[in-house]
Length: 119
Image 1 (cartoon, rainbow, N blue to C red):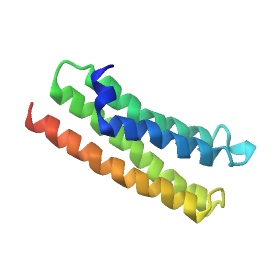
Image 2: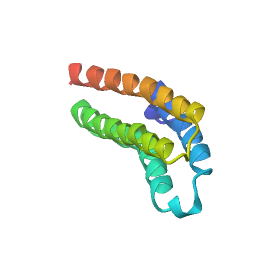
Image 3: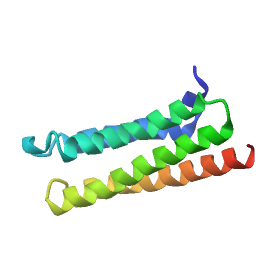
Image 4: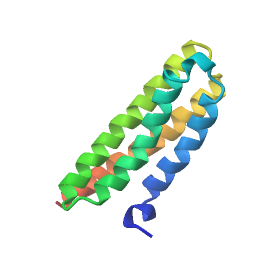
């Protein structure tokens, strides 16, 4: 097992892709290369940046990748607003994605703070 796989925030970020993929499967086909692709890529990027950052030689570098992952998460917070306005998402699905993103954002902030204190 790699060290990043032990991080609860990485595990949650991996699980977070499931509802994003499920929700975007319901989007219109003409959104396949638009909002569908963008939401999925941003969701995948969260866990990917945690994993990549963990391989860096310093905690400061790792913290920078956590920041990048946080930015990707903020994309996934913004994009469902658009999907909701376009009636691609119902309110319950929107709220579920939003709530999980809120939790992951707090975890990422805590990880970043911890890395910066110990660097």
